[in-house]
Length: 346
Image (tube, rainbow, N blue to C red):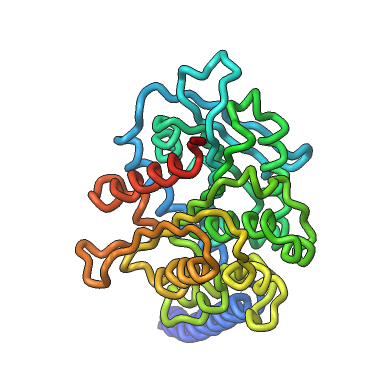
């Protein structure tokens, strides 16, 4: 009896110790999420990476034949994040022929993503008669703004310097991207077309304005303070992403956030723009539609693809990559139309 009694007496102590330990660990985790962007950013990254893998896998059913690629090209010496892939029609292989070129910057909330995400989409653009360059860059929280901007500038310089080998027409370039990649592409386009903004960023564009024929911007972010602070998990996730990428929780007073908000820096010299967003994407009203309105007011040639609020099925963030839907296919067709219109010399 004595042994049994002592055994049962030890359990409350063990439970108390375990509960106390869990409370301490929980409190520690809570403190970590409040004081360090990494835990939250890694959670958001896991969600984005899973979604990107699923979408990339689904796209393979639409892969065209007759497209070749040059992959794993390092565009910046000594930088393990600085690689790009190039897609082009197979008939160009073994030739020095060049095509109008789309330089695509992937999304991922500035903290995730990879150049191979959505590869079939780039193949489809190549199959339509373009060279497509998919670019990697460093993401947060391991690297912070403006690292990615400087890398992408160097990627553009590399593409121009190696135009013949990569089947690139250096005088017919379109910058493109999705989500955070759309923000980055809009930022590099603003740098190329505004000397004042380039000086503020501290980066000299590799592209001359006349080389930049347009931008393709899907589901992007162009006014960062109007993206963060929303309700629920989405609002929390965007706050974590911006914090991890910029190093600042105070978006209102962050110089990085101000520079990233290209809606505030575009000029009348901004290149022709294709802008789209889904009706169920919370970014569309304050980001994509707002940028389209701003550019239109400046006299920039703007092509938009938006949908009524009650459109069915509801089109969420990154809807354009879902080619199993009629709306995704329409977006691809409209994108190709825009590219041809603005890269075909009369």
